[in-house]
Amino acid sequence: MAEDVNKIVLAYSGGLDTSVILKWLSEEYQCPIVAYAADVGQEEDWEAVRAKGLATGAEKVVISDLREEFVRDYVFPAFRANAIYEGSYLLGTSLARPIIAREQVRVAEAENCDAVSHGATGKGNDQVRFELTYLALNPKLKIIAPWRTWDLNSRTKLIAYAEKHDIPIPVTKEKPYSSDENLLHISFEGGILEDPWNEPEEAMFKLSCSPENAPDKATYIEIEFEKGTPVAIDGEKLGPAALLARLNKLGGANGIGRLDMVENRFVGMKSRGVYETPGGTILRAAHRDLETITLDREVMKIRDSLVGRYSELIYNGFWFSPEMKIMQRTMDDCQETVTGVVRLKLYKGNCTPVGRKAERSLYQESFATFEEDEVYTQADAGGFIRLNALRLTIQALVERQKG
Image (tube, rainbow, N blue to C red; front, side, top):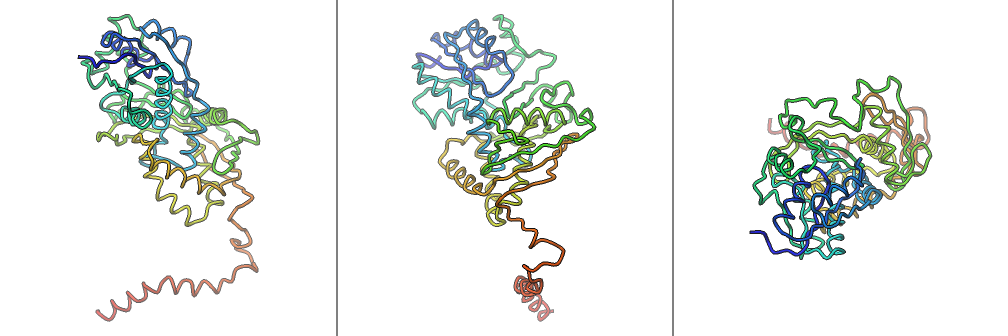
């Protein structure tokens, strides 16, 4: 029996899952439904989304433009920390979920809703990311997760339900993999991709050309950073969303940013995903390179030791946790000196830093030169080596005495 609720706000995309959920909620709960859609940079006809939501049973459709805030307050902070999950994934979906869920809570409060709902399955990470955010920001809201309660437990059943209720859907039985897009990336899952031996079809990719079809001539770009945050491309100052969009075009045109991986979901199973993150791939390479001349060696070691844990917090949905706040402050403190410019070469899927400069650069040619200098006494290195070798020397002496 359905829980007693008065009004629900559904995180709505207009895709297969949430279109079916919208109709199902209206029949199951017999109460007003607000369909809330978040614009985080996906290519979408928003007027069509609004019309479809109303036609499918929503009392109201709310569309929130979150693009600028998404990049400024979620993507860029993560990239200041060099966040990466399991050595490969740049967290495109993971970073979008907290801002989508946070705005959903705001809409629920503004529309006097007492319940929130989402289209995440009971097998995935997104249910955790959405609901941890709901509970962190407004634990009084009731949470409805249809995938955990209904009997429409497969893509095939969803498609049949949609056809029965005349709901237009963008997914077909012949091509049933799903995708999720925002300004940072696009992901593909399901369908033929569920067999990790199957190579992704070239026609599937949207943001990038294949490296084989990329231009034969390299593209050179310069990215300027201020305290770890990118602010300009080739000398042109750009806002966060515009800057990432520009990098997406540059990277995509050169076949950069494709990833095919099997990752460990938070709930415990392994999952195969294919991702396109052209701008993010460039951004991370440039940022890490700038740090090589602006970040102290020991500070970098400490920061790098935290990247894995920081990335897990994002992946697992703990963006609004107290430990995340501490971690973000630490990461940002490390970026005080990371100001400068990096020049990169983009060529057939590769993104290679080829130059870097900074006013507060810790690289000093007068010390590092192989030519004659007057600032470094090479003879000092002998004592340095002997002191660092002292424990090794003692160990060797003890072993010789025993032998």
